[in-house]
Length: 109
Image (cartoon, rainbow, N blue to C red):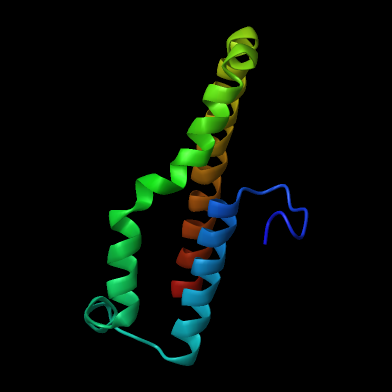
């Protein structure tokens, strides 16, 4: 699907996104409890996916090994980009959490 639609997203990422959307739709159409979810067919499939989750990282690992020279040449820039993006993500997450906590507090009053 990712290749056919020329999406800039790896197949495993697209598959997991579709799984999340499918589960959200399933929950809206047929609400379920945690116990029913684990005991039902969705729970059994999820256990199988979790057991093989490491396979989803194989394509990314192959890509890193394939371009190891490029990664080594730009390792410093990649490390800086990872540190900055991780820090920015944490700051934004805390900000959104605090905002939602404040909004939730007003809704409770």
